[in-house]
Length: 449
Ligand SMILES: [Ca+2]
Image 1 (cartoon, protein in one colour):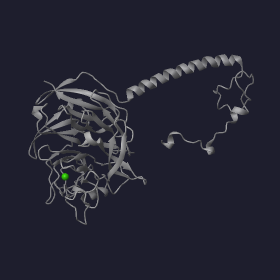
Image 2: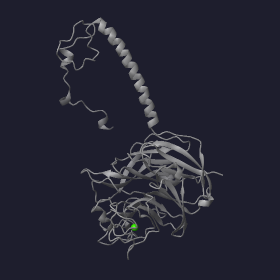
Image 3: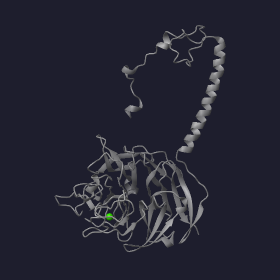
């Protein structure tokens, strides 16, 4: 039990109440309070000087109580409207290049949801940045917040970020969380924990932190962080460079986790075949480096390669296919410029020894999560990459040829909502997660026929 739930009375703060003993009398006692002393608690029910006043006070009390009941009802209503709820408005048809799509809202009222993934039964597990995890079941019922979520730093871009369903969930019931973890000195960094979902689906059990980004800083920006499983059972975690100068320079430092993609065994150790294993000047868990803030990651359905989306500075958002040991250039080169308008580094977009992105976006789309589409439900989307666009306020559908983007369509842009994550459900429907602080939604895109 949480000791804070039932605190023992602290003898040092036991209040003294002189107004109860010396200066007031009980109801019906007929005495007035002594004038000039302690009128602070004149609304105390124990202060009732005469019968006349008692009747008047009784009427007032009834009025007050009625008022309180009304206030309570209003508060309950606000509470009901303010908490996440299921919304089943009629789906509307949205026209796209490949045919009509039925767009519906399957959950609303979430607090800045950040990440979602699909459980084997088709339920959606979703994070809220302030530190809550919920499950939307297939009937459309949204759960209460799950117990057992580790503490997070909910500040700026930090909080409870990604959730990933273990590939062997049907057997082990493991969920993986990426979040901003507080440290005792006021600093923080991205951590990854795994935990077992209780049989009743209400609690995370046996929470174990398997990765902590180091070094830590007291910052609020650029935590990453997505968690995806490669086909070989290893785990990729994408990490930000913490934004500030000079912290961000560590994106080029192989002894730091800032601005990196790491590849881990499920127990958190580095796989033997990671690119920097055996080098004294590098951390063995690193996969690729020179990243800025990677908030999207997915495994290509045919090649098995990791693809990532990456926030650029002003312009210069990137899509990359990180090779083992590759240097992706930040903060040396960029297709964007600094927020100040000054060039990044020497103003180059590319340089020898640095990997060029597969695609860039200027102006920025601010990419969140990404997902490949392979289902037959939308035949025209086969092999496409879907990208959540925060600034773009759309789901981007990218047609690919190998590792080149051939065409882009912006889906559901007329919703006008910042999209943080995107996922494909078991029936080939596409879910998009909106970033609203109080009314975050899960949108469902189904074939319109
Ligand atoms: Ca780059």
